[in-house]
Length: 110
Image 1 (cartoon, rainbow, N blue to C red):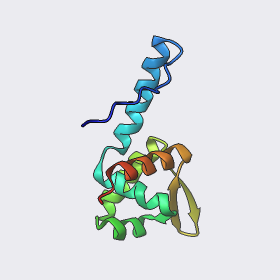
Image 2: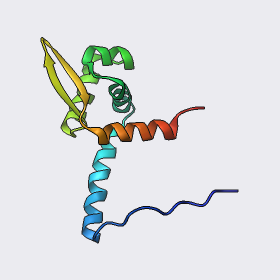
Image 3: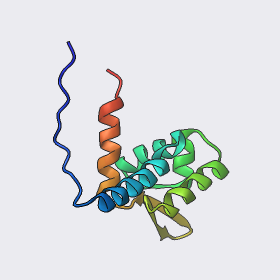
């Protein structure tokens, strides 16, 4: 027997506010909606990484990793800092970390 769906979503203040929330959430989810980008976010949830480390972790070419990191940076899901001649990537904020953790929890294999 199916469990009843909880209806605890808080309504937006107005239809305009709800539309804005939906647009912002859709943009956020689109940025995460690529297997390679999501894998990078999984690894960045654990700790900060360089491009080279991410290449090895997700077994992808440097050009592909850099392209996907550029998209994540553009969408403000990751930030960078320089350490000598290396660029270190990290999650931009806790909202990104929380969403990655929710996705992992929802889709983790038993």
